[in-house]
Each structure stands twice: as C-alpha cells, then as structure tokens.
Length: 299
Image (cartoon, rainbow, N blue to C red; front, top):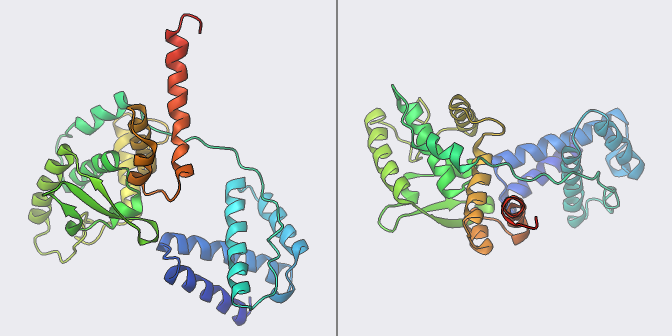
C-alpha cells in the first residue's frame, strides 16, 4: 500500500472522528475493514488505487465471502470501503465509486435475544457470598443495564457527574455524542448511592471521574465489563446468549411486553429511527401468539 493511499485512509478516519463523531470502537472497525480491502486490491491484485474497478471489487468480495465470513460481516466491509470512496468523491480526489453498484449478500434477519424475567430477576436480587469490590461492581452494572438499556460503550463512559439523584435521572452520551436522559429507578437510586460509598472506601485516592473503576482505580474498559457480565450470568445458570447487549435487548423486550410505547422506547434506547426499535415488536408478537394459541378455544 503506497503512502498516498495510506494518507487517504487516515484522512477519511480523521473525518469520521471529527465530523461523524464515531467512537474509537467504530473507527477501529472502519480502519481494519478498509486496510483489508486496500491490501487485497492494491497489493494482492496489484491494482493502482485510481484504477480500482468493479471487477477488482468483485474479486475481493468473492475472496472474503469464501473465507468463512458471515454475510453480515461481508456487508460491513463493503460499506466501509464504499464510505471511503464517497468521502474521496466529495473531496474530488476520485471521480467514481467502484462499489456503488455492488449488490450486497442477503443477510438473515436476526431477532434480538433476551433473558426471560423469571430467570433474570432472581439473579439480580441475589447477593453473592464473600462479595468483593469487583463482584459488587458487576452486580450494580447488571442492574444498570437492565434498568436503563444503555449500550456497553455508554456505560463505561458514565461519570459520577452524570448521576442526578435529586430528579433521579442519568445523563447518557450516546452515538454521535447525542445526549439523552434515562430514569433512575428506586432500586438503581439506592444501589448507586451505596456503590459510591464503597467506591470511595476502596479507591479513596483515585483521580478518575468515571463511575465504574478497574481494579487499578482507573476507568473500566469494555472488555472487562463484557467478560465480567458474561461470567456472572453463566455462573448463576443463565444459558444461551448472556452479555451486556442481550441485557439491552431484555430491557427493551420486557418494556414492550408490559405495554410500553414504541416511540418512548426509541428515546430510551437512543435510536435514531423507529425502524431500529421496531425489531423488538417481533418478540412481543411471538409472545402474544403463544398466549393466543394456549388460551383461545379456536386456536
């Protein structure tokens, strides 16, 4: 890959960071996908960047499709490469986008997985024996995921100043630095107050303003939260998909099953469009169908 092409990539990623306000996780994914595309086309196929055409793109797609990647992952890589060319076209660096007419592989529609109330609530209510700070922190994090539906990236970036105990609200900074406020339940209100007391006792000298801390007293990272939540749920008998994102799905599904308004749920989840929220209605309809088939005389 030439220095010029590397510069194009870096300029695009800087644009995504500054203008689109993408998270570090998203920027890393874009960078990896674009590097893989450029490596394949410009190095393996020996095609100059300005000469990349539909044929070169199709050869790349065939190779990554046959490598065992899912259609969803292939589509993500195609979107990343296409976004690079769209950016360069706006800057008049290139005259065309060789990915504009490419048909993406069809992806199966995946319904969000969630944990049933009768399985999750006993886990949230239980207090483990010999609890240390890490276990206590994970238990509060679990409750927060289920009570608010926040994303894992949003949770690790929560600061103490985001908690408003007076009006019982939590300020959440979502995708694109979009701010929203989610209610603080009575349970979360009490648990967070207790947690802050424990946090101060365990880490009296920490300079971090972040709510959840690592064992070293610094901001906790995404991987730690993911692994801790998964391990905590597994040990307590929750099978299947059990991770922070499935808790977000659980939050949304349980609210809809209890009669929540779809537009209200959209705001709580921080979705840009209602279409993203409507996927949760499939689980609700499935539940209603089960109730109907068991209860209706003509079912």
